[in-house]
Amino acid sequence: MSTISATENKELEKLIVEHIPRDALMACEDAYYSGDMKGRQHSAIFLSGHKPSAAGQNKHFFINESFHEALQVHGADPTPLRGTRLVLGQFGIFNIARLNVPGHKWVNLRRSATRKKLAELNTHIERKYVQGDLFAAPSNVAQGTIFIVGVMDGTDENGIAQLTQVLVALPAPNLKSWLYISAIADFLNLYDQLD
Image 1 (cartoon, helix red, strand yellow):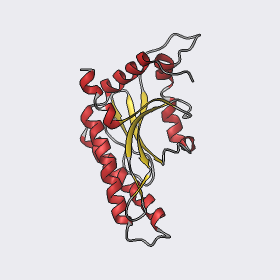
Image 2 (cartoon, rainbow, N blue to C red; image 1 turned 60 degrees about the vertical axis):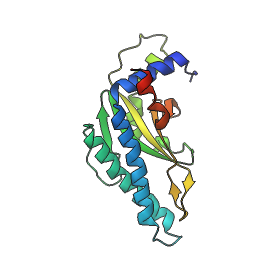
Image 3 (cartoon, rainbow, N blue to C red; image 1 turned 120 degrees about the vertical axis):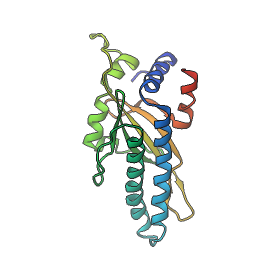
Image 4 (cartoon, helix red, strand yellow; image 1 turned 45 degrees about the vertical axis):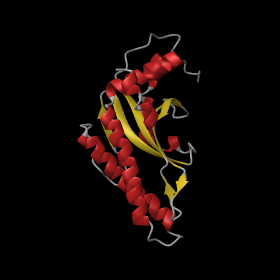
């Protein structure tokens, strides 16, 4: 994939800012931290042999519940909570879902059939903003997918993996790279710059 120029990067940023409200993005970040904290607190009582597994499951459910609530409060009409299924909302043209990565290791992203289908929706975004198709005119972007990515590369006082960073990421259609990725804390500054 070609390197994204600063102009293309700005255009992608404008597209995201146009469709995802600042308050909603802030709520998604807060939901991630809240769910992570609750999951770790509820897992601290387990013995060391069970703690990592219990923490992973508890954090998954608590983060999903917090994320669902954040999407619901901001009108993103989230999918119902149902076990380990992805919680999916909609802001403008963007589907929005969450994704955890351990220690910045971008492994197993393509394992989920649902994530694959969601990422494929970014084909028109890739052609219009990143790498144009020589044989086709870029079409208008009608839909896409944004992942809110939680990076779990810290460890708390109980030895449980801890959330250290939340990112906003636009996956490439093949899920092998990112068309755009930024820490939410940095991305929020764009709302003032692009107004």
